[in-house]
Image (cartoon, rainbow, N blue to C red; front, side, top):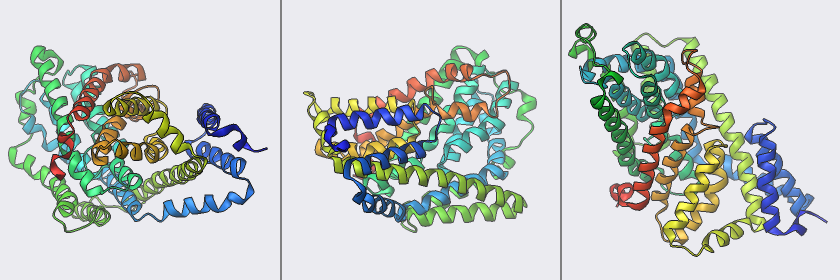
Length: 437
């Protein structure tokens, strides 16, 4: 008697429980998901189900859109190790001026530009933690404000094209990645605007939270040198996003063009070394390996679960809620928020989206709009404990006196701002879809 005798309802409960129990052992998500997938594949359908496993793996790894991911990760790795991002931050100093909270605002603007160059989050937070956090603390900025700006700003990569989150969503949901990129710009700038407004407001109420720069600090850089420092980063943004929206290149080709632009600029600045290139390639290989293994395991698990009838079971359960469609979407958002507290966004995307997106379409909603909601939701997940990877990224480079408790406390107002933007996009869909209609 196999697992199929339990029925899809109890099978679903056991599957979810098995994943969470195995995660408590500290094993990587890819191994946990893969093990559960194999147990249910052979336990439910028997030994003849092996072609199901191989077919799902082949279908996943042959997706052409996946080629863009290593290119964007490599571009981010090169930016992290070159002086381009550092010169961008230095060049923004003169533009921050003597405005209370100006350096924090500058950090947020640098963060959105870094996001537009690479679309990878972890490196941005580490980079800002090295460049911006010590400077704000040295200038007398409030510790919580400084931490929140670095982590929330560094997480904008989930929203701002070329976001890896949006690429994975487009791949799983079978929607245009270019349309996702175009739709995400307005919500990404909205998040930036909320962060900037919050910083300016609290620093206006209490200038001691973000003291203005002194004349000596302002005199260290001229406007001309500041503008020259901005030239290279803006050129990279233009190459990547301009080639996509100008119809010159596909997403994958634009990613490769971005890598080439970073390499040429690093070479011209005499920053390109064999060690830098080697470290960037190793980092890219490690990150892509993690994504691919999680993707393979999740593809098999979702495939076997759908054959079990799990997708129909979940759809019937969600659609069976006697509530308006918007409430059903809110339930999905709540599920994603809870999962985001414990799982990596890649696993969440690959495990939930194959089930959620068809329901969203059945309810009559635009999957592009839902993709933007998903990206905002995953940005929240980067900040929320106990998983909150953004906090761990910053902790790895923050001064020793800053603890994880300090970081999570500092993130609370920024999480509230993210949830506010999530609610606005939820109830006013045109904000996310006007650019593609």
